[in-house]
Length: 115
Length: 111
Image (cartoon, rainbow over all chains, first blue to last red):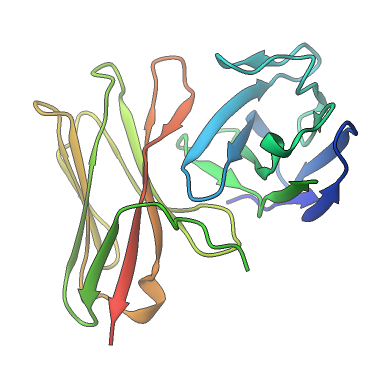
């Protein structure tokens, strides 16, 4: 298994500001993903964080709004830019272990509230 | 703490009874399916998985059934306990190796 640590675990942000969420994995993972979970909803895939290259975004998500970095196999960041109240959500980092069965391991999530 | 699942369908089960949570998936090309459990304020936790070349897989107190003909997945929890209270999500591995989550079901255990 893998342990995924995210920070901050929660934050209250002002409209128009940006916040960067950090994700650290204790094992090498081949794939890392960022998901969003709005209140009372399921998880929606934002993007795949690719090591050393630009992230691959899902429909409805763009790099200018959610820039992602992945400088190595065990670390990634997601920035939520120019936040509005609609960005209030839980943001979850996940990873698939190298040589694993394909299951995703998740962090505890970062709960953002935008005022 | 976070109240995930306020608007999700709810299944109420008596403690000690068996629970069956159902899920329909959309992509006939999906070849790997996973059930996750999410407790309040936490990230999803892996429960059990199944590949498309199987129709049943058993774990400890849990069984997953896959019906590819009708694109249906179910999770059976035997002898449901209070600690089973959570939101349960099915997820499918798309052909591009991305895991997509279903809507989720909140399991509520009655004393």
